[in-house]
Image 1 (cartoon, helix red, strand yellow):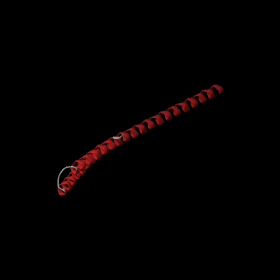
Image 2: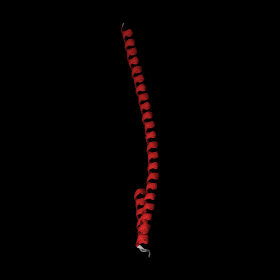
Image 3: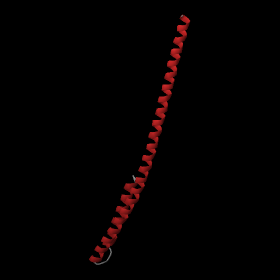
Image 4: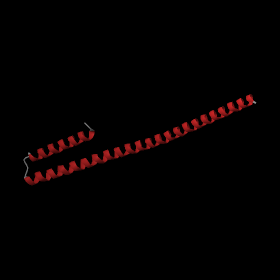
Length: 110
């Protein structure tokens, strides 16, 4: 189960427990309603705080992953360019070898 689902379950359980505890307490109706509203407000504040914390953590992790990916892409481009340059150098060397072997044959035939 994901940590988000666990957190939501815990908060829902805490809210239900608080509401049931208040409802079964021997207080006047107005006092009970006030306490329910107060607990609801406290719970809403708690959820907002947790959401803000998780949002900040997720944002930081996203930025770090984005930065790492950017570095990897740049590194991959550099490696690709190096491989292309190596292939060009080898192709040019092979061309030179072919030209030189043709020159040697032509001088032998003359």
